Amino acid sequence: MDREHIHEERISVLPGAVLTYHAFRGQAHAHRHEPRGGSLEIDHCRDGRIGWEMDGGFTLYMGPGDLSLHRMDRCADSLLRFPLGHYAGISLELEPEALAAALPEDLRRAGVDPVGLADKFCPDGGVTALPAGERIGRIFDVLYDLPDALRPAYCGLKVQELLLFLTLTDPAAEKALDRVRSEQVEIVKEVHRELTAHLDRRPTIEELSRRYLLNTSALKATFKAVYGQPIASYMKTCRVREAARLLRESDDSVAQIARSVGYESQSKFTQVFRDLEQVSPTEYRRQQRKNQE
Image (cartoon, rainbow, N blue to C red; front, side, top):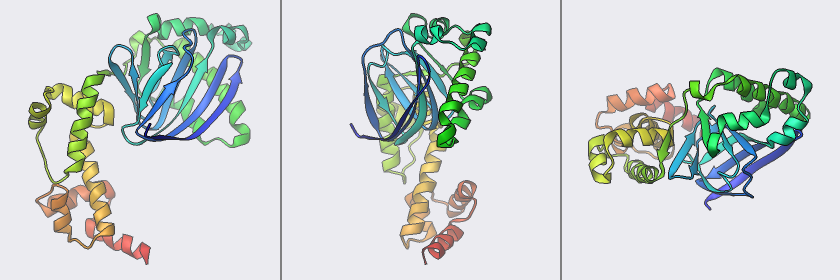
């Protein structure tokens, strides 16, 4: 696979609970392990995006702050995709029965039931995915910047907090992340390749819809699910990123660079560049060359 698993750290935090830090670079990773239908996996995305190809022809994409839960027979032989070329996050593997047998007394008194949580969030082997929010962030964000000496103890406390959060959460009342059809994901990846390879062109959504035989609403929704932004916002960022590279590495005029990334109007290009980089193209080039001296 086109990937590099650049970091993995496993921490046993409670009996029946193992937390793993992950970091990937690349486009995809084949994920294989023994089917464990009784086990539960909880994933939190810190950075980048991750797409998990599920049974039934659907793919779930997660971005920063999102949380998903699934039984581990669903991912025994699956493919993880990283549409932005990188991903960092945490996975938590729970053995509900083992965890229930050794559950801290405070959690037991609070009504935490690991076996019941697995049934509540993954009935009939299903998947629950919750979008980023303040409550999820309070649990996970601190875990990514801990000193090594504090990490095991802090992770153990945060896993207990997560179990309490899940006990209080009604998945039916939460806004769930959308799943998208896997065949539509493949079409959108082709659209993405075309758009990013030809930044000087500006096909309309309607033109792309006709060319790739995907209706406009599905095209827009699937692109946002995979890449985390609407097409227009994503392409604006791509154009400015490429323009910044050309300003650093070439002697082309600002007008030439503007045209090469799809802006006939230099003033419009300057406005968009300033909105994203907080500096004009001319000043950006001057600063970069001064830094290189």
